[in-house]
Length: 264
Image (cartoon, rainbow, N blue to C red; front, side):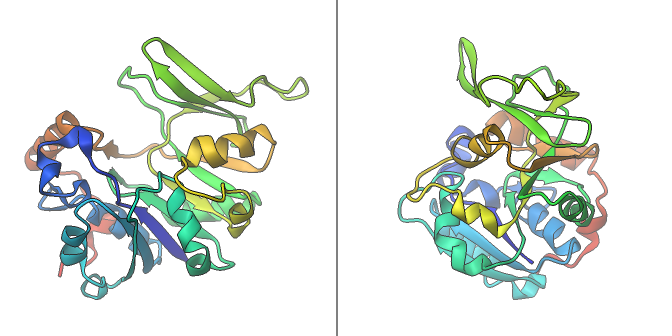
C-alpha cells in the first residue's frame, strides 16, 4: 500500500515563520511537523510515500531526502502551480495503480490506529473512508454526519464564515434514510480505493471535499467515517503552532509510533 502526504501549501496563516520554512518543516517536539504523519504511516506498514511540493519545495526535499534513512521510500510530486487539496491525485494515478491507498495532511498530529482504520474500510466495502474527530473547542467546523453504521450521510461544507453558511451534500436528506446519529470534523487522514480516479475532476485545481467527497455522498456512494477518539492537534495558523510548540515542550504526548527510528 502507498500514501500521499499533502505538503505543497503556502502556509499563509502561519506567516512570518513560513516565509522561510515550509509549514511541514516547522519544528514540533524536536522534529519537523511532517515527521508525525510519516511515522503514523510507517507504523501501519506503509513505506512508499508520495509528497506533493510547491512552496519552498527544496527545503522539504533537503530535509527528508529520499526517505531511506527513515525506512521509507519518498517520491516527490512537484506542483509548478498549486493543484488544491485534491488536484495532486491527478498526477499520481499511475503511482497508486490499482491498490488501496492513504492520503494524509502534513500539518496534523494524531495517534490514530491506521491499520484498524484500513481494516474497517475493507470490511465495509467502502470506496473511501474518512477519519472523523469530535471537536470540543466551540469553533465552527464542517460537519460530516454519519449514521449508526458509520456511513457518511451528509456533508455540510462551510461556504462562508461571516455569516456562517454551508453547502450541503446532498442538499436535502433522502426521505427513506434515518437521521444521522452525530457529526464530526475531519482530522487529516483518509483511505481510498482506486475507483475514485474515475470520479475526480479532470483538471486541477480542485478541493477534495467540494470536488469529490461531497458529490460522492450526494450520489449515495459508499463513503464511511472512522471515528478517532484519541490525541489530535493540527496547525491551522501561527497561534495554533505556538500553542502546540509550547504543549510539546512542557508535556509531550507519548505516541507508540514515535518510538520508530524516524530521524536520520
